[in-house]
Length: 229
Image (cartoon, rainbow, N blue to C red; front, top):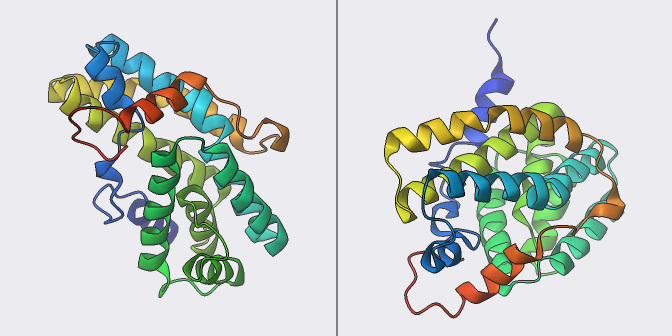
């Protein structure tokens, strides 16, 4: 049976969607230049830790809570999540990356979605009242497109895993075959993380590995850089 929701999910998660995600490595470039990530095994460890420790308690959790807030039409909650998300992104590059990609994503979907929660967030971020984070925009857009939270989170985690894998292929570097093996090997972890993020604990927002924040801060001072973060 034809599923328009599936097409919307594929579109939302398409790596070719022009939001600029390809120009950010989330600190991976720091680890590569330091020699910490230097082969398939260390690349896998980096991605697994990013997804299970960083994304689970941060971006994916924010996307999940934003989807719920949109379902409940709770504008106050969305504003609160925006403030918290800004506060927990300690590295300047990561805050800017979140805002730039979030703004571009909302601009793309602004003419396609008319739900009040999304429209309100887009307006508030456009006039500077709110920061406009990618993860919150993703959750609000997914709700506006009629996607279930399970499908939204699956797409969110997959998009992150795919982007990290692509960065590893370019930076380490890895072969294309190694990259695909690495990505498919992450599927069981993604499935588990989706289940864990369906009802995130707000008290855990911001919990992550400090090393990722430090790597992102150090990236600002690298002598040569291919990525913006």
